[in-house]
Length: 285
Ligand SMILES: NC(=O)c1ccc[n+]([C@@H]2O[C@H](COP(=O)([O-])OP(=O)(O)OC[C@H]3O[C@@H](n4cnc5c(N)ncnc54)[C@H](O)[C@@H]3O)[C@@H](O)[C@H]2O)c1
Image (tube, rainbow, N blue to C red):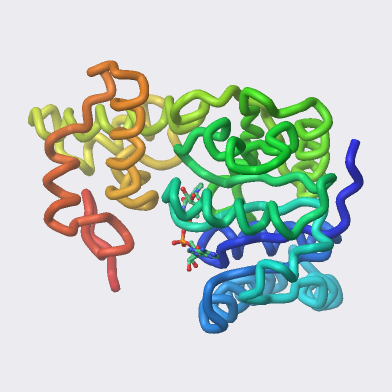
């Protein structure tokens, strides 16, 4: 198993900041990278807010907060990752941008480093093809919000070797997460099951089966879901749900994954859920 002490996290957005927080809290040195100083600072501010929330809930001491924070450095400089043993990429969901990021990372890290992507939908095998050691490449798929949700899907590409899988599983456990190995298939496991369920709930609203509020109540009361599928769609972002359905539809070539026309309409109208204030439900600011 490869020993990991320093983790590079590329992309200081929603997921990157969460990953940096749990990595630093687990005792790793963390280098958090984004494209501008402002975006890096924004990510670091999110980590600070996340750690402070835990202190406020008495789930973290102020000493541990300060120790975690001191392990994080921010930068716009990918070459500063040269000492990282593990690099987790969490930039926007674009194959071209992720490929460019990994090509640059590949040039600076040691050949023993492990590279991982937090992608929700892009093939790990395809991403691994642009680095010099595809056997040391895997998916490390965290869930949002990272500090709260315990699952990490460890996605094995065609060439991922056992050492890489075992090392990533160990890192995930050290972060307090539960790793589950899954194959590199569209949607991996969680999104392949979850997002078509959300899509079906949207078809049900469009068919007049029940209102959005009632569909959510049905699944909470009748299926013991903590949150209804439409409230969950609003939380994930309807644009993200549509993108995942399109990937499933295209990559499996099976019409059972056809995105609901109402989902397409809502995205076209800019009704994206919580982030736009309106989706299947309404939100204050
Ligand atoms: N948000 C979720 O619920 C969620 C859940 C699981 C996985 N993911 C995946 O995680 C990844 C990131 O998603 P997010 O929601 O954090 O996105 P986000 O938009 O919040 O953050 C992406 C960050 O990447 C930065 N970035 C873009 N290009 C870059 C580059 N070349 N170098 C360095 N940084 C760059 C952006 O400036 C931004 O800060 C995506 O692949 C997404 O599919 C997201």
